[in-house]
Length: 392
Image 1: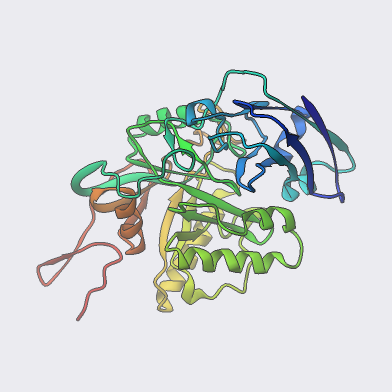
Image 2 (image 1 turned 180 degrees about the horizontal axis):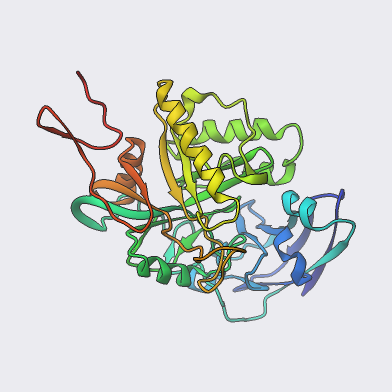
C-alpha cells in the first residue's frame, strides 16, 4: 500500500505527477481517493501503467472514491482500461480543471490523497459489458436496425465520468424512456472506454473543453492525441494551437466535430482563428431548460441562418447537455434537463454507428423538441432530404 498527496491551490501547478513501483504481480489495482466533497469537480485523475498506457482517466466529480483496474470491463471502474497489471513504474497524475479552479476555489486550497493497493473491492460503477478499448474493440458497423427512417438521439450528454450526476446505466434508462434510438456521451476532456449493454445505440464521443470554447467530437475510436495537453495547458497562449491541432486530427481521422453552445454565457466560442470553410456542424439548441439558454440558442440559430445566406453549408445539431438527476431543475426552470431534449433526428437507411456519422455529415438532420417529424422536400417529383443539394 502506498499513499500519495497532492496540493491544489489557485495559481499553483494544475498538473502534478507522482510514481508508484509495482514490484510483484497483482490481480487488481485498488485506487482510493480522499478529496473534500466540495472540490471533487475540480480534479481529474489519470493513471498510466509501466508501458505508458492510460489505465484510468476520469474526472473525480460525483463518481466513486474507490477506483478499480481489473481484468475486464465488469471488474474495472468506468474510465479505466481493463487488463493485466504490469510490473514496473506507474504514473499517478492529478490534474486540476483550470476553468473550475478559477471559478470556484478562490483563495482556498486543499489536498487530494490517493492510496494505491491490491485490496479486493467491489466495482460500483463498472466500464460495462461493452469493453471498447480493453479486451474488445468498438464495432463501428454493428447493426441496430434495418429500417430506413428518421432516428432520434442526443449529441451532447454527460455522466459521472466527468461532471454529470448519472451513471451510464441510469442514463440508458432515461434514454429509453425518452424514446431515443442513439446516444452519444460527450464527457469533458475524457473518453469512455466502454459502456453498459443497452437497446439504445451508443457511439463514443468527447467534449473538448477549453477556455476558448467547447466542441464535441463524435465517433472517435481513440483518444485525441492532444487531450492531456489541453488539460495541462488550458488558459495558456498555446491552447489555440492545441485546439487547431485537435480539429485537424478529427478531420484527418474522419471523426465529426461540432462547436457547442457558441453564444452561451461564459462558455461561448472565442477561438476566432477557425476558418468558416472548415466548419460543418454547430450546436444550435443546447439544453433549453438552462437559465441562459433562450438568448444563446436564438443567437446560434440566427448565426447559422447567416452562414447559409453567405454560402456556407453548416448543419445544426441539438444537445441536451444534460448533467442533472431526473428530479432536479435549474433555477427558474419548469422542466428537468434530460437526455433527448432537444432531440436531433437523423435519417438513416438502417442504423449503425458508421451510418449515423455518414448521415450527419450529409446534413440529414433535424432538431426538435417534443415532436418527431418526417421531413423531405419535393422538386420535380423527386424527394430530397435536409442537407441534400438540388441541382437545377
